[in-house]
Image (tube, rainbow, N blue to C red):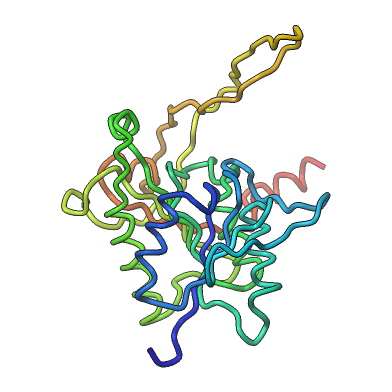
Length: 262
C-alpha cells in the first residue's frame, strides 16, 4: 500500500474487549493501525484526563498498547504526544466498538465518545462507534459485531476515498442496531435523543456496618421528539444512526433572552 493511511484506535471497555478486537479486525485492511486502550474498563468516565498520577504505556504487541491506568481521553492525548507528532499525525481516530449504545445525553458520560472528542480537539477527525444490544442478546451473551464491522469499514473507506464529512471540532457518533447485516435498513442521519434520567442507586451495608452504593444501569425511557429523527428512533427502527456532534455547548438561542434577563 503506497502512502498508507494511519488510524489510531481506542475504546473505553479496556484493551482486551472483544468489541475492540472486532474493530481492529475490521480496519486492519484499510490502514496502518496503532491501538492505545485503557488497561481497565472506563465506561462512563466522560472526557476526563488523569492529572493526579503518572501514566505509562505497556506494549501488548507491536503497535498495540494499554495505558496503565488511563482513560480514553488519556489514551488519545498521550498517543498523539508520544507515538505521533505534528508532521505524522493519524488521518483518523476511531473510538469503540463500545459494548452498548451511546445515544442522547449519554454521550456526555461516554468514554467512547470522549476518545473521539479529544481527537477533534487535537485537530484529528474522529468517529465514535457503539453497538446496541437487545435484552435477549445480553441474556445469551450473544454479541455479534458483524454489522458494526461492516458499517465502520464502509464509513472509513468513504472518508479515505473523499474527505471527512464534518468541520473541525466535530465528530461522528455512530450507533449500531442489534441486527445482522442482512436485517439492517442502512444508514440514517440523526440528532441526539433525550433520555428520561433517574438518580436511583442500590444501597447496601458492608460487614463493618458502613453504607455503600452501587450506581446501576440508567433508565431506558426516552422523551418523544419532533422533527429530525433521533439516534434512539433510528436504532429502534433498524437503522445505523449517524449523528454529527460538535463541541460548542453554547445555547445560542438563549443568548439574546439572557442579555435581556441580566
